[in-house]
Amino acid sequence: MWTTLKAKAAEVADRRIEAMLGADRAADFAVQAGDMRMDYAKTNIDVATRDMLIGMLETTGVAAKRDAMFAGTAINETEGRAVLHTALRNLDGGPVMVGGADVMPEVSGTLKRMDAFAQDVRSGKFQGQGGKITDVVNIGIGGSDLGPAMAALALAPYHDGPRCHFVSNVDPADIAKVLRSCDPATTLVIVASKTFTTIETMTNARTAKAWMGEKVSDVGAQFAALSTSAEKTADFGISPDRVFGFEDWVGGRYSMWGPIGLSLMIAIGADAFHAFLRGAQAMDVHFQAADWHENMPALLALVGIWHNQGCGYTTRAVLPYDNNLSRLPAYLQQLEMESNGKGVSMDGADLPVHSGPVVWGEPGTNGQHAFYQLIHQGTRVVPCEFLVAARGHEDALHHQHQLLVANCLAQSEALMKGRDLDEARSKVADKFEGAELDRQAKHRVFPGNRPSITLAYPQLTPFVLGQIVALYEHRVFVEGVVLGLNSYDQWGVELGKELATALQPVVEGVKTAADKDGSTAALVDFLQKHGV
Ligand code: F6P
Image 1 (spheres, rainbow, N blue to C red):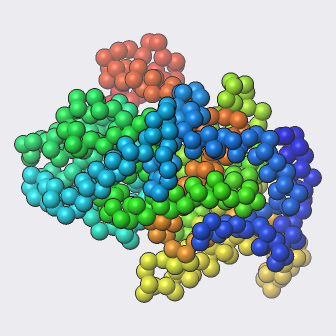
Image 2 (image 1 turned 180 degrees about the horizontal axis):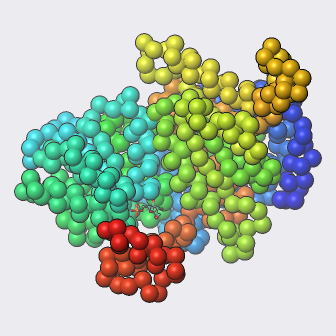
Image 3 (image 1 turned 90 degrees about the horizontal axis):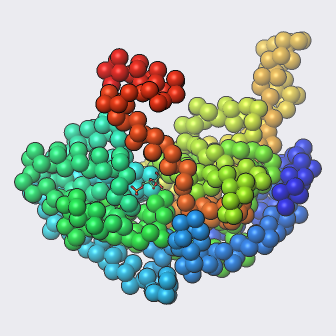
């Protein structure tokens, strides 16, 4: 399968995308899900290649695995768990069975409790000891931070609740800055941790507790917890009526649809949060029902596989022309790289090809004035994913939005078309001549033929954001199944955690660095001499 893919990529490597692009291709190589459109016409994929890629879905049993995931089978085989974040947004669906029991009553009950609590905080029925809650501080890291933080920023135009802050880093600079801007008497602290053991989160939670204790008598009363461990949240002193639980079949990086989304719900209100869930649910339905040729998550995954495992382009840039999506690349880094950054397949054998790509990016147009130079003229090809809305939320400044859209479309066009030497020469022919003209012109050549896809949508509403995030979740799923790996564990984060625990007493000077390697020991020595 992989040999055929690579051979096909090599065979068409020199073909110009632009030459393939007629009106028919624009229609054939675009797909619609609801009112969202994904254009992949500016890639070097032709009908035969697409058929071959779709054949890989059949060979690797993606449909059966997809159905198993939605049905609650333990497809996370290394941890023996179901993968059911989709149940958290199953607002109109039927029962979802795990181990013979329907999980939906529990999911719906928790969502109702979240709705009520968010409403109480927003209305002032739930008060801090100094009055109505003015600030919410979500303390969490990884999936317990990136999802709600990304979405709260993305949906800023819908934000009509208390101010929302996100603290994640164990670096005290992070929490200190946030707490400086809050009044303990009117702040709600939400400790978000699936396990309730993550050292960064628990350290920051204790810091917040001490901060609150300086001004407020009943500290626990202004804390809420989002976790799978009722026991640990109780030990921390948080009353069960402010604990919102979920099950281990919700992976951390897939968890913002349930309790981990509480801060977002408080910011935008329950109705908008439900619209967000409905957008994701609509994508779930599309993913399950659409034919592969029309299936947006499947095609998105296949375009990625073509570029990474086929063409050998190992990084991918996510470029939202939507400033409110500025945390989307960071969110996707966890979603995609923690899920599919694995070296072995499900059965323990080494992967025969590269794992998922390096994902990175920044919003346009900012990136244009920073790293786009490399994307256009560097020696590596970086497939790009553009995201763009027809309308922003600033009606009075719509002309600025039009300029934003023009820039987005111009970039994918420029990447595809490039500029040849003759054209480059004509651009500077009035300034230079002879050999100098050639030399100068060469610097102005754009190789072009660089692939991109564009995801376009009417406006970044809660519903659309739900569609986008679920689209990427299912893309990761499909890619993981085709690669034959487990997208739902993350053993690769463990070693660093173990070594950090062992190094803490060394850094504090309680233990010597004698058993450390020479480089680490020398760095400890340097930092200790400078006051660590
Ligand atoms: O260390 C990685 C990780 O386990 C992520 O998968 C997870 O999202 C994050 O840490 C936070 O975990 P928790 O929600 O249990 O604090």
